[in-house]
Length: 440
Image (tube, rainbow, N blue to C red; front, top):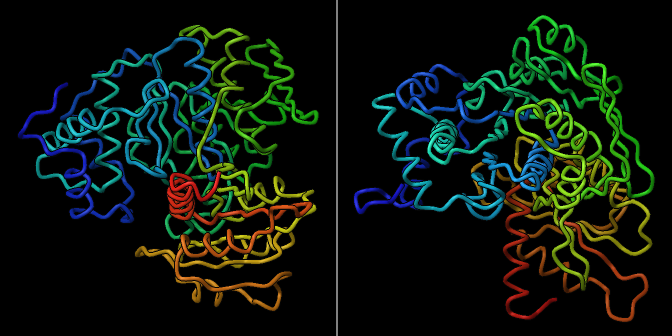
């Protein structure tokens, strides 16, 4: 596919899509997507498809799958959301961003196919992913659910294997007020007669019965799927078709013991498809070790140590807390979040690990100012002190200025978290400071 002078470039396309239907707009439903898909007619018969849903852990699971298949030499296309720094992060072929010109061509193809059908921002780009899966001819297509599952655009395509990583309270205004409500929506990616890999160790009431009713072949954490950590090494056991397969001494490239379930689910999916896409045990080990995912406990600076994480709900905050425990030095937090998140719960989960909070504002329609965030919590319950700062960048500058490093044992550390937008702003700002040689 070659871009032409008549084809809008990627930046022009993204501006057009945002003006037509802002990315923050949600209008769940498959009818529009299915109509355009019928016009687009992508041929997906040459690839196997893995759909990954869940509250937390989707991105990690996708990254493990990508890395394993890359080690095995399979041509792999992944569609994920949201992105941190550049839009092209959402479309990866063999771990590399798809070129902007090709993405523009894909968006143009969807535009031609949709006619007068109105699509949301996410629906348009998901359909572009299906188009790319036709023209780029991957042997493996990995689709990350955007929101929920049952009515999410990626669910317009039948997956050969579906994965649900976790179930927790998030996006209640669209998915329901209880874990059971949310589980019903996420379970909509299951298909009759096909594997559904459930990494959730404590499924909410009714979830298993619903999956059984669909007729999915359930592979469940604690039954067919088991894992155990030994220090920083992971042992995984997967039982499929009366065969037990063991993978010992795995060293995941994505940090955190909460990755045990995500990685086990990814390996189970690979094993389910191994008759079609062979992967050896050695390739699985190598892929696990080589996996990377920006914004997940990502150490961006060494001096002072600065860690960036996208944790944005109570469950991901608990995972972040587990990784922060056991440090003897001071911890300074830069925190900024969207208004639809349970800020008081997130802060409460992490407060015993934080000595000083920098509450920062997010300049977006869904974002909160620092003062609005503080109003959501009771500052008197905070273990440490706190400041209100206009932006993530300014909060980072203050934290860097106050962090004790040189000659101080143990040194201070800075943790930045609260949303993908928070992480993106922090990473961009820290890279600018590094380029100016302010920090190493």
